[in-house]
Amino acid sequence: MKKRTVFKKGPVAVMKEAFGMLLFTILVGVMIVIGLVQAEASSRAEGLRLLEESVKRAVVECYALEGRYPESIAHIEQRYGVIIDRSKYNVHYSIFAPNIMPDITVIDKRGGEG
Image 1 (cartoon, rainbow, N blue to C red):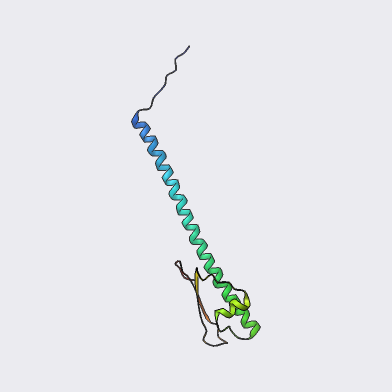
Image 2: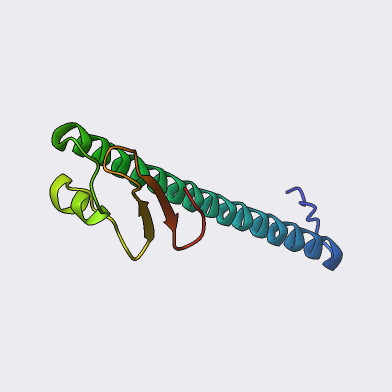
C-alpha cells in the first residue's frame, strides 16, 4: 500500500480562507441591500409619476365632459375614480379659473416630489 501524503493547512492559511469567505459574504450582502434600496426608490418614483398622470388625465377628462376644470381634487376623486393614498402622497391642486388648466403637484410624503 502506498502512503498518502496529507497536507495540513497551517493556522495562517485557515485564517486567510475564513477571512476571504467572510469578506465575500459581506460583499454579496451589501450588493443585495443596494439592489433593494434602488428597487424601492424606483418603485416610489413610478408610483408618484402614475398618480400625477392619473390626476392630470382625470382633470382633462372632466374638462372635456363638463366644459370646465374641476374646482377641487375631491371632485376628481368622487366622479372620476382617482384614488389618492393620503398616507403616501400630498396632492396640491390650485385652480385659477374654470377654463385654465390647474396647477397640479404631487408630493411623496416619504421624500421626493413630482
